[in-house]
Length: 334
Image (cartoon, rainbow, N blue to C red; front, side):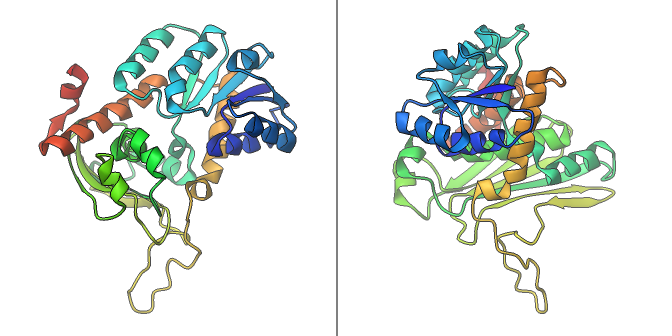
């Protein structure tokens, strides 16, 4: 099949490399506002260059991958849908929830699939955890712990435009908690602080946060995030039930050092980048998108799915600011 790529920054170039290695993808058509980025991708992956999103859509593509800046997401999603072309778009759907809701309204009822990029749904460990929960292996859940710790903060300009740590980072934890447990979040309580890079506080954001989520069956989920984890990129999940407990991410590249005498775990070189930790998941995610394009499966992460994680992020942002519990219903109605 023929796939278009809009945006060739770090993640867009990575997606171009992944797509070029899939047997089902015969050719790529790429576009980026920076001509040098598009030219580099064309030279590296044998792609065709188009000078605009409209030109990509006019080039006979079967599907489009959107990896452009967040502000461009709504317009590009809608352009693809209106052209009848299946679209994969990196999260978030839009910069604000109001814009995201408008996108949902616009694509609702249209027979064109949209897949939003929440790659943890394609990680083997999280897939196995979901199967264990859904299969009843853990019995009734009582506690979930989800962690995302970055090795270092992103650039100051990125932080200033990110919408905050809950919308940018924690949202991955929120999505995977919903996906693995099959439950909805009803209420949150969040706390946070700044003990590292000053530009994060200056942007009105926190560099380290914790949130307690109450799920609709009474399960408690504890989410921990930080922009500062010197040992590496740490993504884990624990699920504790009345019959068993399991964990995702306890493997030899776990960026955590045990001080127990005689213990050698973990023995590997720690993960230091999200593309390292989730390389296989990204490949599985884009393979899934080619199946969506082929019509052999529905979107594995819809616009509606993505917005549900976004509402949790909105509630945590408000909770942190006002130092109080916030229900999801409250932010939906705001």
